[in-house]
Image (cartoon, one colour):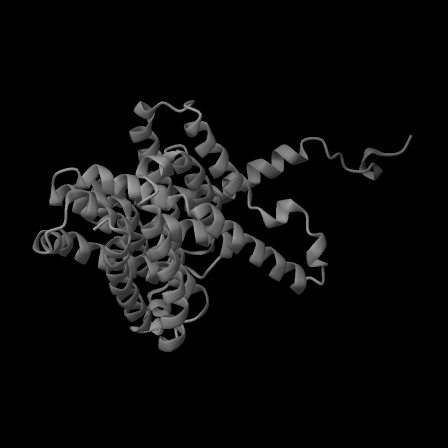
Length: 353
């Protein structure tokens, strides 16, 4: 009988051990991201114009600058920056109905789609002019075109941009969100805009949903609810844009690996979280997700995004942001003015002003 030492080692329990090891490796970094996210969420409640996600990445950067997290935290921070981020997009899909476009009305769709095209084309043109290229250009463009931090988060989940580029894009979006909240209601009254016209302007020209809510309800009348519907409908544009970006990234990776791009399986072309987002929205459209649940779902989804952005902030270095210089901020300013002006111009042309 052969001695036991000569027997092949048993693989029984290896999968469980692997899962346990992964959890143990990720737990420290994820715990730090969750703590930062909890503090950021509390700060966002106190200062809703800024919001928890922006506080999350800012506090993450500050903590990273002060403590310089070591390698022990990196697996958990990476988990927060990607899987948690993707999960947050699926969760927020439960609050969006695919039938909301009909509620907004066909008359407002040309303005929404037109300003979306202006933002994306402007990001390409102004980015070239200012020398802001690559992922930073894309993140600022998508954030301006659709829904601020949420759009940047969804795009980051696909293109895997550098943490510094995500931070700069969110910082840029945040800066002009604050300016918009403070100035748009007064400008709307000076221009004599009707509540629906202002709601359409705010919903298409202000980036982040929380800032749209603040500006719309500050204007008064029906501007608040209408601006929210416009912004939520605009958020649905994430589906085709993320799908296009995912296809581009999959084909680029396939070419780098020497694979044939025309024979790529759909799993590589369509990210799983985007499928989850569409399924979640379809469930809401079918009435399977009661509207009474939406506030709680939004809170959970926003906290997950805040956790993800805290992980991104904890992973980056301020030196990377400083190297970017002022040009991305100038790009954000140019896009903000361009989209705001084009929204009013298109409303005038379509008779919705």
